[in-house]
Image (tube, rainbow, N blue to C red; front, side):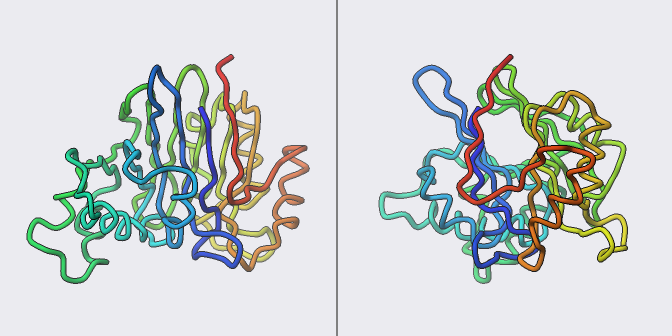
Length: 257
């Protein structure tokens, strides 16, 4: 399993990174399966440096805030209006309730049939796994002001845990347990952001990973442009020595035990 950071800026695209988007690629036989997790504002451009858009096998949307889904509109254009014609098979797009209608509202003047001509929308449910070729994606409902999910991604014995946007909650334990890599929301800063039920801080992300058990690598992500990455990392360090911070174009190779 290969995990590529397409965008890791929180809340809006920053000067050095697009908003949230992560590409998982798994080689199987004579082809590579490509599953995209979130397609936030500004991420469609850098995504094309890493994969042909027609080679995507599925898109999973953690929640419907624009920093996680806005560029689905651009993906629709790239598929529907391509000079060579749209792909024969609709691209599966999995998300929370009302994903199809909410995304359509962002695109003024859709033709009859709208995005359903290009995308096959599916609804996520807590702990109900979705297979995509050799990849199994299990969504976990998390703690955010809107319906939101984290994703546990498994292929060939390797495990990625992507929290999406969340504060501390019970589901972080099964989401993260024994993961080879955890990409954890760290948008908030201890001592600055006191509101709860929205985002993790570096310290809360690290404590959740430690409590889950068996996590091999922790990477903080979803840092807004106004955050100091070193402050976020330092707040996590006492609970997870060696914690890392995501950067655009980072690639993580996860191997089966």
